[in-house]
Amino acid sequence: MPDNQDFDFDVLIVGGGPVGMLLASELRISRAKPVVLERLPERTPHSKAFGLHARSMESLDRRGLLERFRDGAPSWNNGHFAGLDVWVDFSLLDSAQNYALLSEQTRTERLLEERAQEFGVEIRRGHEVTAVRQDADGVEAHVTGPEGSYTLRGRYLVGADGGRSLVRKAAGIAFPGTGGKVTARLADVVLADGEKAPMGMERTERGLLFCVPLDDTYHRVATFDFHQARETEGELTLEEFTDSLREIWGDDLGASRPRWLSWFTDSACQAEQYRAGRIFLAGDAAHTHFPVGGQGVNLGLQDVLNLGWKLAADINGWACEGLLDTYDRERQGPARKVLANTRAQIALMNPDPYVTPLRELFEDLMRKEEVNRHVAEMLSGVGVRYDLPGPGHRLLGDFARDLTVTTAQGAVTLPKLLRRGTFALLDLSGRPEISGVYQEWAEPIAWPGRVQHVVGVCEQEAELAGLLVRPDGYVAWAADKGAPPTEIAEGLRAALAAWAGTEGPGRPVFK
Ligand SMILES: Cc1cc2nc3c(=O)[nH]c(=O)nc-3n(C[C@H](O)[C@H](O)[C@H](O)COP(=O)(O)OP(=O)(O)OC[C@H]3O[C@@H](n4cnc5c(N)ncnc54)[C@H](O)[C@@H]3O)c2cc1C
Image (cartoon, rainbow, N blue to C red):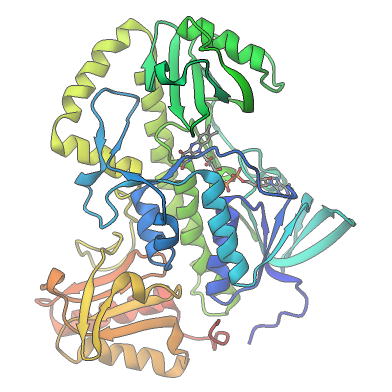
């Protein structure tokens, strides 16, 4: 058992937004002990994000959380790209969750916090991290809480503290990117005549208007000004907001009684590294971009699904060398692509009449199923695939689909097998080598909970001999039935050693 005496917690998580809360559960399910340090005494009542995309829903399903998120929440098949008149059709996705779910960020945060609480995670609200320092063995956070200041020591620290991340700055991680040229002003307001308000996104000569109803009384209205950068960093006022409405829409829509006013720009930046020694970044602390396409929360959740089990493997003493560095390697690419697609959307949304033919061309392209599917995969995260080492196979590095395996004990689905945050090894070969390699690997470890091993038949993948799926749902190894037995055995042996470790007793199975 690893020595825990010098540490208050295994992982200090700075920030209890959606990303920090999910990370806490991911660590706990993998037998590590995190603490969440959140400066807000209570969850904010204002939702930035509206929804969740397919890859998030697939991942939540692999932790048994899908039903909670779906419960009472509307879903829809369409999304928009740059506000084009041709919709993105999520039903084209090759995914069991081929839709977008309406889950306001406050709801998403509540559900993720409740989950962390069920796992017994210590969540300290009203505790602000003011400084971070690391040495060779651990990390210290200086915290100011309701009863004064104190210091906590952990093996690792993760900055999930949003776009202005103190952790990122303390770790000396550069945040290069493009500066903001477009100013968005957003308000949750009552409109004089909500029924007659424009719906969705409207491009005007000077910018864009975004307007959707939130409930029977309130609308979310935003103006995007492409011509003039905001001159102040101060808070947005109702007056400035209604001025921008008149400027962009020609009428202030009788907006009044704001319950939330906010502004932001299209600046898009990405941390040069997601790791500096014992400090990691995730979510908006690692990447920020214009919220067009609703991708930020989704991207951040995928960061911590990638990071959680790797950190826990290290803490539990069985991570192979270099495992923690794969986090940066795997997660930089998806964020780079999201930043690129949001920049492309901003370019297409520009009110300049010269852009109009480009929009029309894009609309024509979007009518083609292949193009529309590509855009749906991009926005939903379903197109994410990691470049993983190993013998080439069409599924390597891809997200494993919802396979069902018929075993001697009955049918079992892959999402269910992954619920406890373990690996899953599907032996579909009908031959001895895969289970033989697994037994030979598992015996000295004497910790059956690290890999869920099932033997059976999968009708959806009749050619497949075996599949090793990581806790985050991505395929670490796959082989077809036609492959030579020695190649199958060697490939699996190498993949188990590389990803699931070889030594280390691990900790008792977390209940
Ligand atoms: C208008 C708007 C609309 C959006 N719409 C969508 C959408 O539809 N879909 C989508 O996926 N994304 C959307 N986004 C983006 C999304 O809101 C962010 O990507 C998301 O909030 C990032 O989550 P996070 O946990 O990384 O950071 P945050 O949500 O920023 O959480 C960080 C937390 O850290 C805390 N914190 C900060 N510093 C400290 C400190 N020093 N000590 C302790 N605690 C600290 C903060 O209080 C905060 O609670 C939108 C953003 C905006 C602005």
